[in-house]
Each structure stands twice: as structure tokens, then as C-alpha cells.
Length: 149
Length: 149
Image (cartoon, rainbow over all chains, first blue to last red; front, side, top):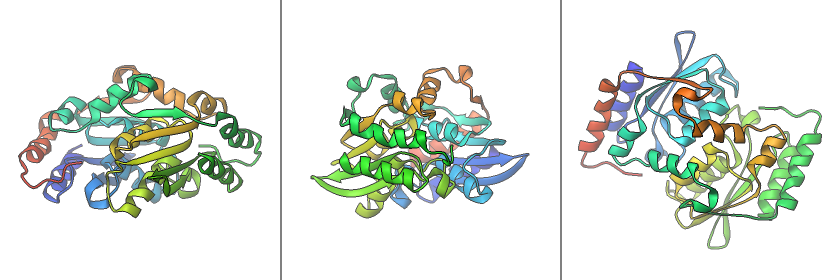
């Protein structure tokens, strides 16, 4: 956690957002990440997502079971979703989403939005062509040699 | 939407998950994405995230205001979070999260987890060193020349 915090402070000095993350396995650091949204022109380049991608690249897997994530801040819904998809064993965090809201980040707003029904969200959404879209799901269900994740 | 669906079917044939996404601006396609979790060893490489990354790279921005996303399936919490961070104007989707659960994807499970208090989630989490972690947030708040996002 001290390393994740050090990375978060370093990243402010480097012009990035105040977030750092570390992935560890068996007590050793596997990969780190910092927020690079503005420097990489990538709104998904949060510290946790970058750490997950780096750890997967290093370990050659899309499944981080057996690893733990240390994040300088409680993950936003995007990063928390990524943590579930990566099957990380445990999450440690320093600041929480209220602290993030206090310095102008949208985490708490996005958590509230996800709690709403789609029709009540600020993000407008509309379902189209479900009868055609389902065909790919049927093909997936029928595929014998698929790699599940 | 027809293009997003075409991409989703194509991706099953190519060994990937049954998901495709398209980002459009002013009626023109800006970028597309398909699910590459297993082929790229990247659990964050969902169709919507890949389309957002590609659109941002093409337009040279981390802000996709003015763009719309067409996804062959209702986004999971990770992708929905990414859509908020990218400031997309509107979301169109084909299959929904129940359809995704029906063929074995965790979307509905992750939505339920996010609704729970951290202590009730399957993912174990623990807060550490908040007094040290807050220092990076103070530095960010005090920084005059920061690029906000």
C-alpha cells in the first residue's frame, strides 16, 4: 500500500491524476499502474485498470486469481468491474469514494447512476434489435471449442 | 447497431466472446471494438472498452462528448463506468444483462455485487493507511496547472 501511495503522489508531480495501484502475488509486486487518462487520451486508463493489464501481460493470463490489488483509492465502478473480471482475490484501498468526490472526481456520481434503472439515469439508453443481437449469443452457446473467461 | 451485431457474430467465429461495439459521431462510424479478453490476455478488453480506446486514439481526446455507442449487449458495470468517464452522449444496446447471464457471463452477478456494501461483497476488501493516502489528493487539490477529466 505504501508503494501504491508513493505512485499516486509521483503521478500528481508528473501531471496525472492522484491515483496509484499495485498488484501483488505471494507477497511480491507483479505490476503497478498509475492514472494516465489525460496523458494517454484514454478514459479507461485508471491506475487499477493499468495495473491489471500490466499484471496480465506479465503473467500471460487473463485470470489474476491468487493476486491482490492495493489501490491508493477505492475503485470506481469501472475499476471494480475490472477487478471482478480479473478474479483478483482481495482489494486493499486507502482513500474512499467520498474523498474522491471531495476533490472533484465522478466516482460517487457513477455509483449512484448504476443504482438507478436505465431509464432514470443521466445517460440516455435505448434497446435496439434484440432479435438480431441474440444470434451471436446462440452461436457462442453452441460453440464447442470456446475459451471461457 | 447492425454493424455492432455483425462484429459480435464475426468475433465468435474468430474465437472471441460474442460482443461487438461501434462508436459513431454525426452519423459516421468513428471506431469499433470486439471482445479480445482471451486473445489479448486482458480482462478489460471488452468490446465497449476497446471501442472507447480506439475512438479516443482516433480523435485525440479523452472526452467523447458528441459521440454515441452502439453495443451488441447491455454494458457490464466496467463498461458502463467507462461510458460515463468517456462522456458519451447515448447508449444503444441489443442483448441485455439477462441474456448475457443466460450464456454464462458474470454481468448480472457483478451488478448485484456493486449494489452491496463492500463488507457484504464476495470480493473481500480492506481499507489501509487513509491518513497517508489522502496526501496525494491534497497535492492534486492544490495543483494550479492540473488537467481535469
